[in-house]
Length: 539
Image 1 (cartoon, rainbow, N blue to C red):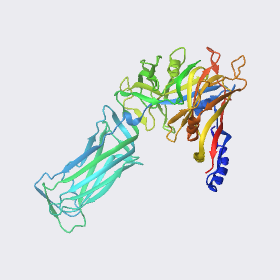
Image 2: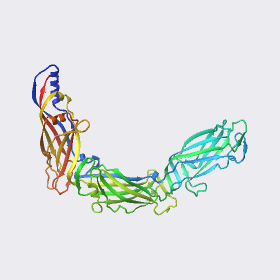
Image 3: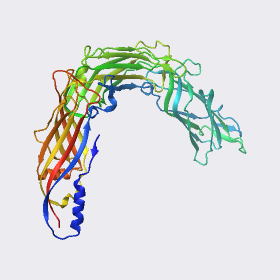
Image 4: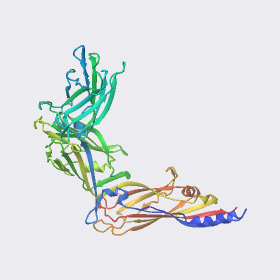
């Protein structure tokens, strides 16, 4: 925890400024002022994100990390394209006389339409829509207002087929009547098997039309007076689908995910005693599938180093059984595949010791590798799919070589220091209390308001001793180290005007080549104070 302190000389300067405001011209004198600058403490959580650490019963620590590597969802497998159905109804005879309220669709043949969706090898029998819109656009060249009934017999909500009525004005002069409306199809169940229930990807629509029953006279319609009805199905997203999902290969990657475990480490190397990775794939689709993973790798963008995984899962087919439908909540039981990778069957330790900030992969998903073995009874629910992930477990038993941590602490110096006309010298003292089985080389840098380095504060005498160890290489106490840092006028001026101090610590474990276990209570405490010598002059 970082504690921000205010320099103790602020009170002294405040008194001096009050005196100086009452006098013109006056004496000057040398003075020594001692002040704390900052106090901070480092734990293992400063090296590794705290939420990833697990405390074991013996107080040692284990680093755990879970990541969803890839998620192959319903919308990747089934994509219903936007589709427009345009029906133009033209009289087969040169003219026809209609009475008020008379149905005109018998005279306009073809009022029932079958629309087949091209679904890239997928054959759907049933689809429940999570969302979707149907836009109906009607252009009327008949000189009377017309009532339109639009039906989708194969689309039902709570067992009731879709049915809507719209009115469109008649033609006036050369200007046809026109109307447009959008309808929400969310929640509708669509039977896509056609009129005889032996088709796939097929939707039925029916249109009926009548002359306005409130009109006052008959109307003559010619074959130059078409009725044009365009239906646009758009943004159709299934909540559930059943049918055959084809064999179209779905490729994932090459792609990279962020890997945050070592984001606080800027350089150095780390040797780990053991690493375990559980790689798992969950198939939430009611269809058999095969997964092939040509590559998984770790990349350290700071060093440019990339390590590729060698393990039984690389380039070897992983066959996944289909999920089981439960018809309850949850609606299905996914099938699972998992394999544990460790030091003996893979190079997973080298992959992690690369201190990566990126995990990359490439994989292929092959639905129905044996074909349509279900007889159009594949199924999939929204939110379920094929998920590949990894669970990483790293006991913190390690060897550290120049493992470098960078952190900042804020400081707040009183800007009335401009009343100090001469700065002779300053002695900074760094008090370190180290409870880690690491030595640490420390450097301090002053930062301005833009986080730019203005100066360094410590020379070559910057070693913090490691904690004393017992026979099991466990730290049994904290060891005190005091570093005295003489600082000239320019450096102290940079310090006074600093907004933050950057701490760079390079850690090295003792007792090499032995692995050192890290315990929950290990801490490294810092306290920096300064003894300042000034010439102060009152004006």
